[in-house]
Amino acid sequence: MGRLRLASRCMALLVAVHRTQGLATTTFSESFSGAAADGLRLRVLSWNVAAVNNNPFEYWITHPKSEYKQLMESVERFISQPGEEDVMVHEVFTDEMFQRLMERMRSAELEGIDVVEKLWSSTYRTRRIVTEFLRDPVIGKKRLASMPDRVTNTIQLMQGRTYRPSVVNCYVGELGSLEVWFSKWLSFFFEENVDLDHSGSKKVYTLLQKIRKKKYPAISEEEEAASIPLQLMMQGIFDAILMRLMLRTDVSTSWEDLRREICDSLNSKKNELIKGILQETYKDADVLFLQEAGNELLTLLREKYTDAFHIAVPRSFSNERAQNSIILLRRSIFAEPTEVEVPADGWDPGDLLLLRCQVHQGPEIALASFHGDTNGLLTVPMLSKVWRHVPVSRLVFGLDANTHEKKVDGKAHVLDFEETYRGLGLQACWGDVKPKLYTTFNARTYLQPQLNKAAKSNELEEKGDRNPKDFVLFTKHFKVGDVIRDNTGEGRYVEDMVFPTLQFPSDHALVAVDLLLDSSERSEL
Image 1 (tube, rainbow, N blue to C red):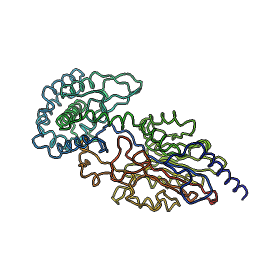
Image 2: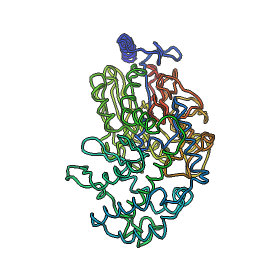
Image 3: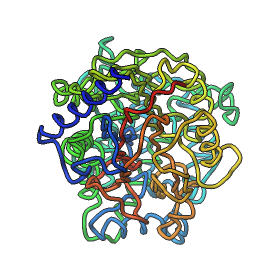
């Protein structure tokens, strides 16, 4: 009993010392915000910082300029009701463009270009650009435009990136007219050399792979044999249609200026924005659970946080996916953490990190960070498996559970998740779950290939991803004080606002929780 009181006094002293270090901000109150108690205060945040989207126009964002909404609504009208604008493919991707592409493909000695020439004349040349091309589900099933886009949209090099000249990425430079765009497009595929892995430079077109009928049954054997030059033609048509679309919008601000602003905030400067929010608004946090953290963000965090924080990454950290769960722990509170291995069971390498860590002159605590599948179906089995591997009695867990407000087949329901974690003896920062306490609100635009998922400007709530996905869970050893949802980077949440924004670059709200490890709690799991 005497040792317990001594540990309690030591923890209280540690908290007092910690509070004198000039770390307090307006985000967390100066003292513990819950009921008065004796123990160790932990200011915790959990945030899925989300991987960078290559296409800056893929999702609706909240933009300060009215021209953004005008542009996206113009695209929406063009694709949903094209009318006279639904011209034939050859009026946009012209016969002259096609012949220039054929010359390049012949020089590259690509297999199947005669088939491509036949398909151009018989199938694609006279199709309508919207109703018979962009909205054709068969093209999607064959992956004829989406596959080359995935490979060449944004290419990660050994140093930096290169972009296909296209509307739907962060290409650096002006695309200008269709003629200027197409010359740059041809040069990109057939003249630019790229080195992805120190294996030597190669032309961009050589990165394309055949589309196999075995994997994509909609494609014919003839199309499979000619699928590399066919992908080049289809990508050219797709990019040309989007260029025409943007050039014909009636928006006073250049679409390229809007794209540049979005790319700066959500792509090229995204990690700096994230770091700024963490260092300024949440500089007093003691535990940071981050999900979907990429390599560049991790490098920035190591530069700025290593002196004051332990930075823990999974042994299974994935450099390729760049979507890892990591944990930062304040050194003045925690000793060096060690990872607890939990065998993956459906989730990808780097999605889960479980640590055990000694509090200075206090108990051991387990800490975990997780991000799973989009529909959340892995979350419940993951939690049950983690629970079996937790090596100590006290646990704090920050996660993107990917749970949903409405009960739908094939998606994890938030109330089912609540039943699971309560059954394990865990509590959530939200208390009783409120299904409308959302931590995501995003929706796809019409300027991306999955048009069946697109939402009009007046359908964002109906078709968007507006769900209660993010949690901080903890054992009974902790008391909870203030809980903050933040979709602004300023410690506040704006209801009915889609995000990301130019100031808040994630599509998940940040969750901040004031916890107190009660020194009187001695029971074990």
